[in-house]
Image (cartoon, rainbow, N blue to C red; front, top):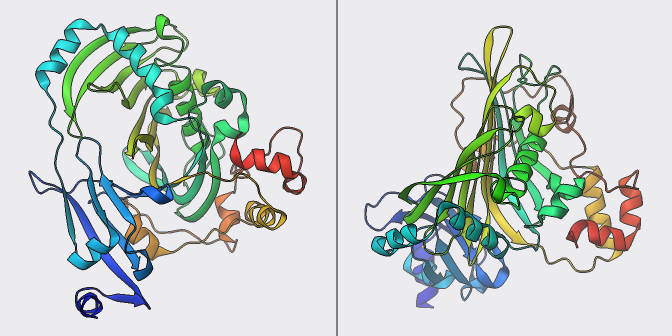
Length: 430
């Protein structure tokens, strides 16, 4: 009884037997927020990220008090507790301690191994850390367009992506799973007032290019079987998110696909924490007929959930000139929630629910959602949700295509969901 009275005193009640905790994750040494820290529920194979200020909100049901919680971020020791302990303690701040690494040992490792050996070891570990089994990523997508450094349009969306896991050959061959995309839920946008770099029709949904770049650079680039074709150098040893990290530079061999960049490799276990690429001829790599594109920059980073690395951020910036004016188009995907895909067998009713979701996407605009969850966009553009069209039609106007591409040999989603075995493979990527 005292326990319940205590809860009623320290926590706002949101419903019968449910309470809300607002928590900020901070660095134990400098007291600064830890952005995008991961909140993991191990028993449920579910996790989500705090926002850019290290803040997250937990709705706690009294029936879930024994549920284990692990709060972590790359470069920090894990914070382990239970929902009950957080509720009873009225926790509003969680402090993560930076991991202590032995810099001397890292320097010795650098002396013993060449840059190519570091990359080869990191490449071997990719499959181990990224895993092959698929998962669902609830992510934020942003697409912005600048003309002479002034914003002239943007699109933002929150949706569910089906990530196939680390399967390079399968990702490159199968257009369905290299696309990754599953479903959009909440969007906001303005009309693009000028045509974009590499587009003459005013394209407003370019995420497929971002994912195509990820597939090419990660599966076909400096960490692939083409390692012998690249040149590498250990450029520096630095601290990244509290870890000692090798910054390994690389240069591609070909002229038509000439690009260079850096790989961030953890010094203690060779995990790849990030990949950065500068490319002067992205059009050739992605098959774009674009003569105005001057250069591009690509970046992918990963986050840890337990012992596994999940996709954290993807970004691609393309710059070029159209009519004498400099255009910059930036695409960015940031992970929000991570769920394991454990669908083994779907009955008719379950397949029907997913089928309806495919053909009738639930897309809406909720300003409060973006105020709470989205990063603030530094533009003074009026929201343009008009033209007397449903929001879904507006979003998929121009080149916006159906968000779950059909497998080969299927013409409609109805054909797909009626075939139970194929539908299960479609959802499971098995």
